[in-house]
Length: 319
Image (cartoon, rainbow, N blue to C red; front, side, top):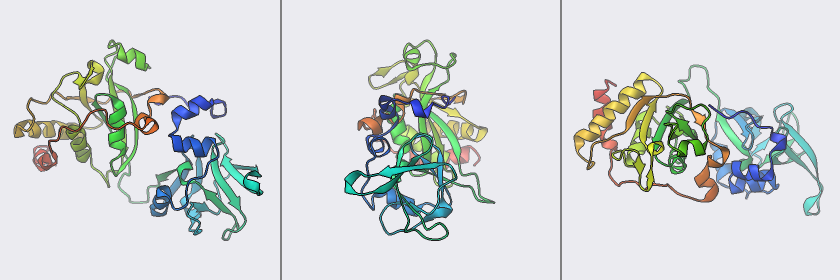
């Protein structure tokens, strides 16, 4: 279950450092400026219909219909969502400008100038890293989002893995499959709650399938060791697929059977296939941990490719 909405105005500097990556913190909380024409700008140019939210607190700031190419190398908009963006005078760097920030969390966005296009004549020049794009479904579109939940040992590296996959919209770490409500990390580490450390993935089925997520899952941890991944031992480190519908369940069972039948792994798979239960979101300092601290995957890929077994699994699942 997601944590309750924090009081954004009262978050401490230390809490913001936990929530944000170092670059996000530099821009949003220290009023930094990212380089023009950076990777985030390239992504901005490729986005379609949708909305741009504050990457600090999630408030909807701009609609894609108000975006335009200003040639400056930063995302530009001629109008924000009503009441979402506040402004103040900025006299830093020996000039007078108007700085704009998120009206809810005060995160720095960029600056606004009066040289934009009609109908407003304004140019909101925004740091791409301050924005989180969320696609908007169009009439007749297939579902744009689906959810999958995996447990593969320490959830820091599992989250980093799934966030790296094209088509994954979001990933959060937490706890699932136990008997205790609102467990803390300390509770789960104690081994009495029966929860597993999990990564809950939101993905675009048009860009990446559940089956492809499973390939990444099984290729990047050891699914043959019960309650253990490398040096991490305990029920919280078990391997599990928590399915959200019958199709996911059938695909997981069929894929495990196909891998076992191939004899590519030295031992049989012990991955648990269980119905998704309440997702208890982990403490904020665990979210995007690898990104914040410059860590890679906690467990190395075992080097055995399993993707070519998907057709056999799909046939067995009747799909």
